[in-house]
Length: 92
Image (cartoon, rainbow, N blue to C red):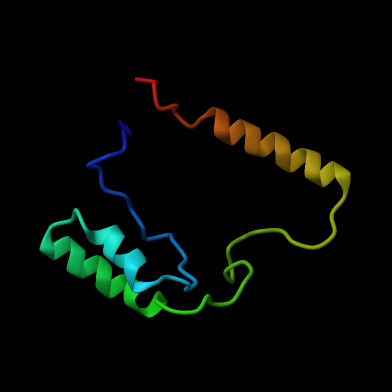
């Protein structure tokens, strides 16, 4: 069984871009309380239908375009350092 079952997620940083069907939303809310289901439905309703724009959200901090191999290597090191500080599922 997934260790994340019956936990709440913070979706405040999630960017929805459409492409949901009513069936998708029904699946997402099927095991929620009426209050939580209604809240999630109201959040997702604007995203039912065709997919929205593709690409990155504005001001997300992502670097796009050309960059040097040195920059890429530095970013990989920074990423690996940050990920090493994230607790693993089995860590206590």
